[in-house]
Length: 379
Ligand code: SDX
Image 1 (cartoon, rainbow, N blue to C red):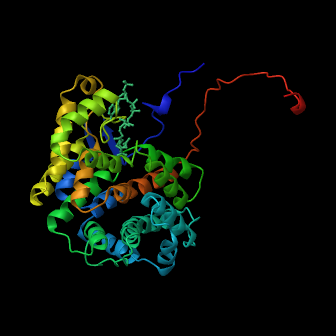
Image 2: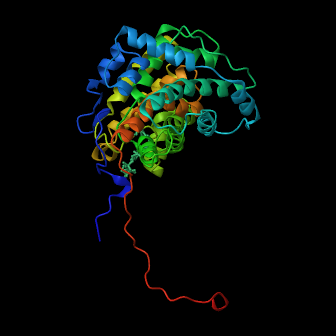
């Protein structure tokens, strides 16, 4: 009998040059650049270019890349017609997963896995994910989708297409920080899923559709939605102590947005997101949600149960407050996570194809053996 690594915890299954997660020290780098530098000096498009092309773009390359994304950012009528027939109460990530799969239906190059064609599809996926997200957020409210403004970047466009309002520079900066921080995170569940599908030489749309399916779970990309719903259940900062005592300590309820398979210290992304969430909260004169989050975090940090297990706030904790302050409803939050992570998913798919070996682990059989057949009439 072999030792089974439940959930593949701690198992190294591939090599990557895309990002490095140092779970002990709490560091994250993309192609060797620290997220602290990327969130201070770069925008999401620059980060996506770095992941896809393995180096930072010069001004000409970045302008070209942003224009390439801009030309892809359109919402063809056949997508709107289909979306208008979707049930309005369907979870938005299910809608996005379906639309991304449909993107492959209308792409004649879908099954051409050559690098040049794959790169073109990668740009298409990065461009379409915010388009679909914003269009569904409006259609499900009976509103008409707003076409993108080709003169602004992806973060500004997402907010504009979602709200119909021109976002402030602070709002655009905060969303860029979020999207940069979500762009890649080594072999997390959804990225691993995309690599498994790519390893069979299946197409990029199948791999991304599968990644979206993995992302949907509240243990992974659905956590930001569950975290915001938890804060809304708490309601106001005065209720935090009783929630912690009764629900978390008394009933063993998990604090959503807390804990991580790899980080054994505070998720470095949470540290950056906390600052931006607090700034947005103070700018809006509505610090309620930030105060609830900070109050609950303080109680957990002072609690032996959490400290013994090294359970800290992860990326989804303060990002839920940041996104809510930007007008993103909780059930749309996993889609904004997907908008950011799209760059990482397509990067890992390209990396898998470069040196591919079918991903095929094994399972330990622990069932019965040599059972004697019993005829149907005798059972
Ligand atoms: C993301 O991997 C990535 O990179 C993912 C991600 C990315 O960028 O792609 O970082 C994004 O998915 C972040 C995680 C978002 N999920 C949540 O916030 C949901 C709440 N968190 C937990 O479900 C949990 O922490 C996981 C799933 C994130 C990690 O789970 P593990 O590694 O399988 O650990 P575990 O569930 O075995 O927990 C170990 C112990 C258990 O206690 P004991 O059995 O020892 O008594 O820690 C406890 C757990 O009960 N625990 C928590 C807790 N998380 C773990 N207790 C209270 N609250 C929590 N949030």
